[in-house]
View 1 (spheres, one colour):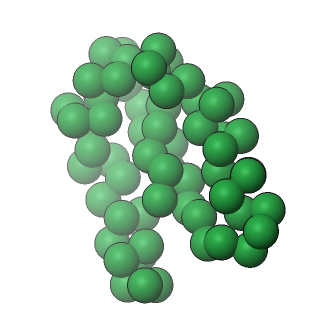
View 2 (cartoon, helix red, strand yellow; view 1 turned 180 degrees about the horizontal axis):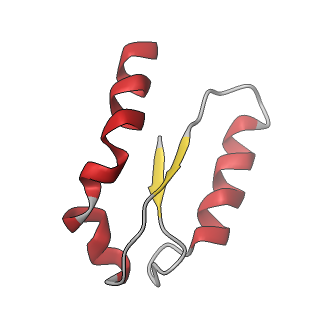
Length: 62
């Protein structure tokens, strides 16, 4: 599972989407969840609850 937001300067959204596509290209399951925020990379901590449903679904699929 890849959790990202476009405003992240550490892991920019376009790079995360490209990485997800590469992972999926060989049939490996990969899910991507985009969160929103205004604090860049820090939103991955502060706004992780936005990804809660996606995280639960990913865990259940395992």
